[in-house]
Length: 165
Image (cartoon, rainbow, N blue to C red; front, side, top):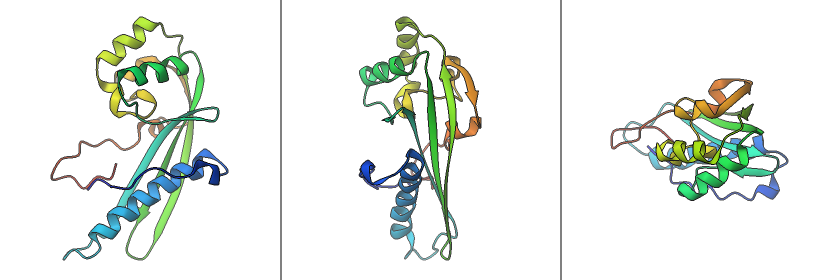
């Protein structure tokens, strides 16, 4: 099930990016839990996660369109940025939240390389406009930390899905 949580938290209330992304994951899980808790068979575990990319104080989520993807990827080109993933695990009796971060450095990308990547369409549903597990991995020069932090959870939501994204 996909969360309907409005991801519009006041960033000024958070001391760091990690706490912010952790709360986003938690509130997504709470949204799904509230909608499912009275089902005849309530869930025994709900897992939610969210990921975003940061460059200094700037946070990049999923691009709005191809133009936004170009802007984001151009900012990240030849620079090191940090990817944060927040996770929440909730059972009826317990909840665990945490976040992790990983540094990623893009290579020196030309406008043509960025435009070619955008044409693949992969960029539009990925935080920071790229998927490290796909063709976007070609944009990456180096990773310092856990590769799986920058992947987030992979899923293809459909009418039978129970994923929270």
